[in-house]
Length: 93
Image (cartoon, rainbow, N blue to C red; front, side, top):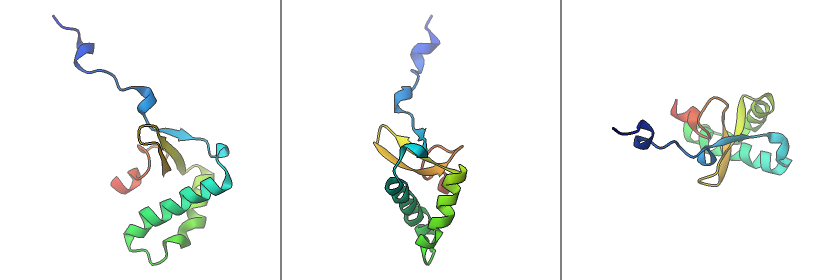
């Protein structure tokens, strides 16, 4: 007989992406994440001026529609939907 827990080890929770409270970030850091989101995700959609979306994206962050995800494995942060799996998950859905 074998133990079922030996077959599939659980993922290390320290390696899972997590949401960072925006209050912990400086205005410059948050603005950088918003600009990165606009250019990366809106820029690929043939938007003529992706930076024109900055105010709308910042509002979404302030309202909690977009959150800051941190990936400890890749040591990266980015914006994504609260229910998603981190940055870019909205693009994959």
